[in-house]
Length: 123
Image (cartoon, rainbow, N blue to C red; front, side, top):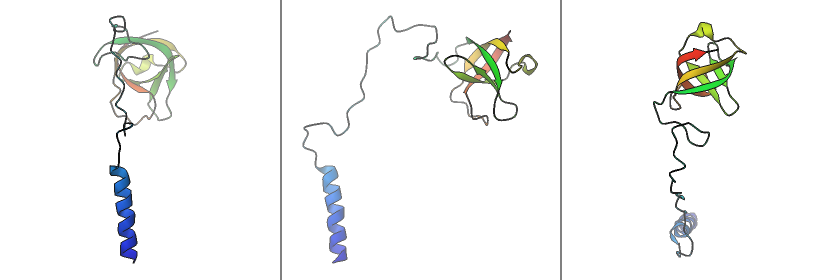
């Protein structure tokens, strides 16, 4: 009897997954918005990150991270984890402009901010 009930439960569950009458899509396809010529720009924006490997400049305030040795750059829109650069030029609370490349896929132990490989830092 238990086997029969278990079989009926499994069949009902599988039948529910398979029964689709086509009146509405089971999963809606992702919406695609065609890009317009005005939308493309070489300057980074909050909505569109710069192309990989593009050198950009970011201005913000330096802050210490929660992990030792981690230096963050806080901007109005985002927080970056600074990788490399002259650590002597990086004092917490200082306003600086940092040049480099965002590395969003880089894994770190700092657990804060978007990794940003520094090529130059200016007060």
